[in-house]
Amino acid sequence: MVIESSTAGPSPQFWFASGRTLTSDASLIVTVDRTVFSLCLVAVGFSSSVHITILLCVSSDSSGINTRESLPVPAASRGTADIVGFGASGVVIVRNNFNPQKTDAHPDFGYIPGWRVEKHVRLLADTTGRGHLDIVGFGDSAVWVALNRGDNTFGASKAVTTEFTYDLGWRIDKHLRFMADIRGTGRCDIVGFGDAGVFVSVNNGDGSFSPAKLAIATFGYEAGGWRLEKHPRFLADVNGNGQLDIVGFGEDTVWIASNNGDGTFQPARAAVQSLCYNSGGWRVEKHPRFVADLTARGMGNLT
Image (cartoon, rainbow, N blue to C red; front, side, top):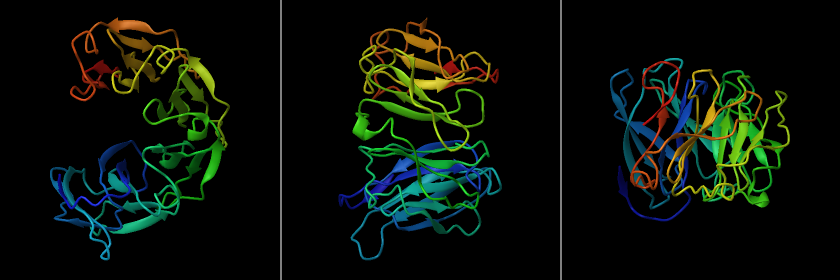
């Protein structure tokens, strides 16, 4: 990545969201140090075997920052990746087609409305089971959801719970928060790695979430002494039953807590004494670790 100018400012988050209507998995791809509003694509090549080059630039009245990033993308058809950016004034989308254009998708969840990278987690997740990725934001006093209309716009933000928020003590540098379907309903639940362990707020299927319950009393900041800077934690299917289990890389051991399928987990069990902080000298800042199905058996392997 080449960054020109070092002007300070808000940090928009850019995501790849699969599908012309944001229909599949999403993953963070790049963060830059300025509001990005004059967003354009250059040297575009949409096919299954080429890259696109993205030029991100600020509006003309700013001294700005220019960032060039080469990204692999699949073919431009249904099921391929669009770009979703959490910018200064809200959420913008660049659709993956032969005439990519910026679309203002939602006026909330941006820097000007008060959202901050150092305080507020923002995710894309299917909360309705329709196959469309909605916007989920963990704000100061509530978790907000904006439903995907299926046309690259989103409905009005709605508060779904007051838990897992900044005002209740959840912090970016201490606690993990995920949106994940842990019961096999097709709708994402809220999973938070807090102080006392892992908490789950079940998706009720009507746009609301149940009160958070302690699902397992470990993998937390106080419960087990787990730290973001030392101990990666994942949700992954490790036994091939289609349910997401908890996998944690601890001080000396990789621990697994199997999913019961009802929003709770079995007691954590030791899986392997390797790939950890003390057993092998693995470091978060130096050594990426993943849980991925490398053998196509439907079960995640440690890599």
